[in-house]
Length: 305
Image (tube, rainbow, N blue to C red):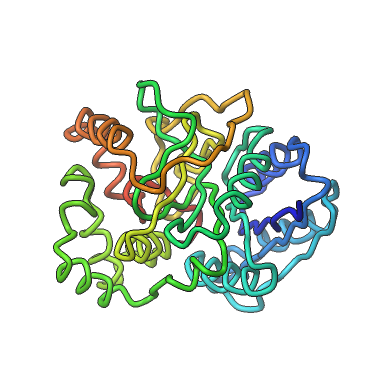
């Protein structure tokens, strides 16, 4: 098997990045995988010292098949950095695994990603593979599909990424035309439509809500693990869209997720479990946190998404 390259987007958080890389290197497939690190330029002089320190540190990284470092000359922000980076890599390699600098990973993460990328590479209805799973508190299938796309440790192919629509206004129009707003909002338990409206209004600059909407409108699916392979450590008030919270934390799987072919449709039972989970927290701090930090239904997004 030819393993997918890993795109890692970094900015100015050394502690988070070190933990991300430590967990990534603990994967048995790391030494066979190419790592492409995208380092965004500082927004202003106040960030310059930290960014330069990160760039000095990443030049010392080892433990992967090949390492390529892309240092942006001008600040792109996380959204444009990810859009450009993912586009470049899927055009070069046809597939990519995407990480940010605040993801702690299971040692089985890369195996799951590569297994699933290989298994579903020719299935046009599959948009992506995802590594994070909510701490729902119910027994979930080993793997399952939900409609749309996601952003906390994910992977995709060139054929699927070509469906990405950067124009939020167009996405809002299509959701309205297709009468998908309620479903896009997880049966009105998540403020996804509002997040997309905020992106159009310039209140956030999220690539993720546009990726989710693009896949959702095309009725494409994302594969999820029944047990999470990712923990986001960026919900500690260190990122631009993040507030301090542990409410999305769950245990990381300490056993391999077995990837086998399952029917290519949204798992209704898994969807219902997610909706029950969202409803339980609908009027709690959970909802307030999500509305502030989440560019994609329930996702916090690093430094400048």
